[in-house]
Image 1: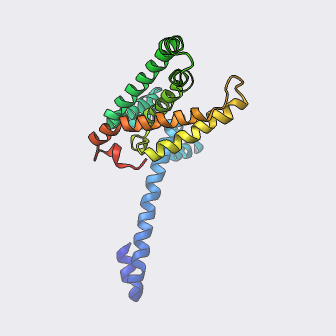
Image 2: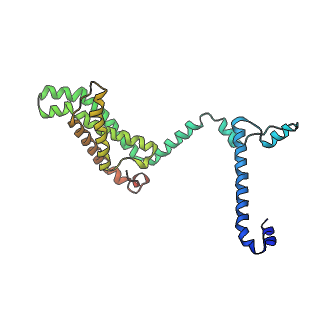
Image 3: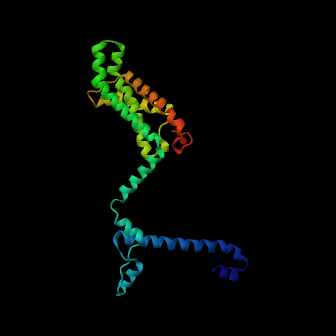
Length: 234
């Protein structure tokens, strides 16, 4: 085709060369797309391709077209999606490494602290130091402090499994995130949860929990410095 363009176009041969090359590339791409389309058609319904349909229209006997090996394997794999999700989560957990363990430890510590406060520290403080500021903090704000740290750890735990490079690691980001979450908990939640009451000091407790979570994670950040999990800015 290119030689024809050179022989019969004379002075326009250089101009027709790119056009010829473009046409050849487009034809190759169309051929590839048609092949992919036939494979998808066979995988979805086991239908015959265009050539087989033409033969059937002419009264000839059309042989069924067997699906390709990859399409057949995907069609017979009902748990393929769940398996791919599991592999993705396992890969992200491997990337997160110590960060994932750190968030799990923080969550476990906060849950243990919450139940220890509810069933041990609160009754002891009320009985031993009634009316003291320490008792007031233990009764009213210690759980909120633990909740701030636990919520950050829970958020980062989810990010560890989905997008490890997006985990929250900066103190400013942590404080802004917890501040807006606290505004919702303290001033929006009471609108539809009657037992909930707004308390600005609870918001301070959430932010204090965020600060402690960030401080506790500093050794981990130094350990992971240079790792792909810590290169992103979150």
